[in-house]
Image (cartoon, helix red, strand yellow):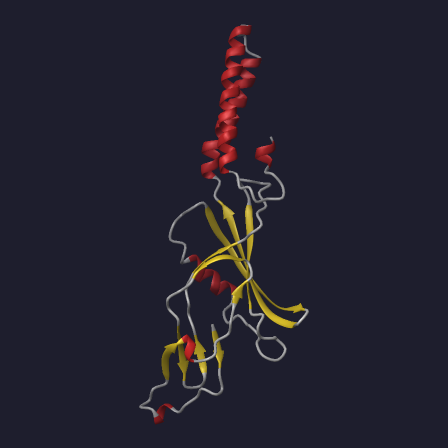
Length: 221
């Protein structure tokens, strides 16, 4: 966060050329900012702000937050998800007091965000953009910045553990059905295939996300 306070200025020449100081956050006023999609948050212990001689305030507070995101898993496991992170302050009206602006470009933020992905996990970070707008509520207009995060699922694990075994069972089912085997052998093979399909259905039920408006095509077929 960066903001200015015109009442906190000084001439560095009068104070041994000190152009900035670091003080606790509660020393001066700071904007109250919240994340609208937040479910849980682990607060940072770094509650300090850097104050410049020209009245500029810079505060960096890293913290871990859990967000809500509506998933669209119709194309699972070849799906791409988009989640919003909306930053707002509903204590200060945007018209007279407080307007939030993003200092860096979306490309610069995306480059920095990719550097924080230390593990090659299930998701691939694909895009980051932001929208600045004014939210109109009953008690006034407030500034909101929404960051749009796009992620693509890596399907390799699901292809090897789910899709390929399922296709193999279907091919085996067709081979047994039209093969020259006797009726007793076909029944035995069909029972084994049904058991294998049931096990794959249990595995599919455990790995599929549940928070979606539409079930995935792989689950319905």
